[in-house]
Image 1 (spheres, rainbow, N blue to C red):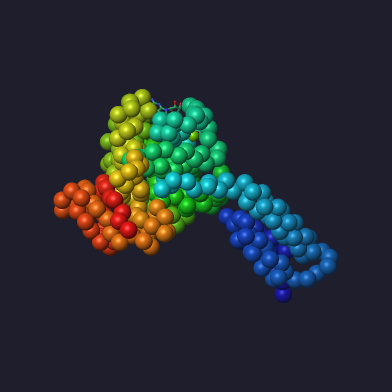
Image 2: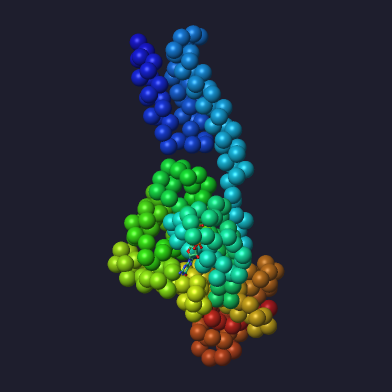
Length: 302
Ligand SMILES: Nc1nc2c(ncn2[C@@H]2O[C@H](COP(=O)(O)OP(=O)(O)OP(=O)(O)O)[C@@H](O)[C@H]2O)c(=O)[nH]1
Ligand SMILES: [Mg+2]
């Protein structure tokens, strides 16, 4: 005995709450399969409604995909800049990278992820501003689903929060990120520190490093840059004849460095001469399995 169609309709709508894209399509198909196959009457209407939803969701999914704002990865690491609207994310991105980007004294000035490639610790790193995430993001509110998927591609997160704004706003953002199952190394930038310091943020998030920054003071911006470098977790190895270092995930050996430059060099490499923290003395000759440290300089031997 089928249940009253009004109840049925309510149940269907409840089953669809928070479901989007493929998930919604799957659920709609299941619902269609469960509906009694009457050709007329209220159940036929329900069927028509579900079919309409199916079409609508398919179109929306295509649009979302085209719109899904994927960010092409560049550089040795990708760091996401995440925080509530108006936290000063764009201003910070601009100060760190010299790109020109719209900033404004109102929420949601930035509506799509904005990538910027910049040198951090001498290594090219990609910073990506994620537009202001708001509560409910993981359930797709404010079109935040695709934003969270951009975040999923990042190696680490720089949370940004206006030092004078209520800490709950940042907590809501962090909850959304956690609810989406995204866990990354993170630090908090207490922004606009020319107005307020980071005391409230430190008290609220004792487990995370909090670093004050204001775009009005270059020294604070460079201090943040150094913090971002540590956040990447990478080490730098310099080549004797190259100004810019190679960035690698530790532990990294002489072979890893050679291989990262060119696969052939990796194959041919027998060892290296090393200067720096991992060398016992300048120019020490080591084998290809020697583990390098951040700041070493090497001359690959083949
Ligand atoms: N005093 C002060 N104001 C700042 C600082 N950084 C940003 N602001 C101001 O804060 C407002 C928001 O800055 P945005 O950089 O647009 O912030 P956002 O987080 O990118 O904002 P949405 O993209 O809208 O989410 C602007 O009015 C900025 O001028 C700072 O270091 N000190
Ligand atoms: Mg912005």
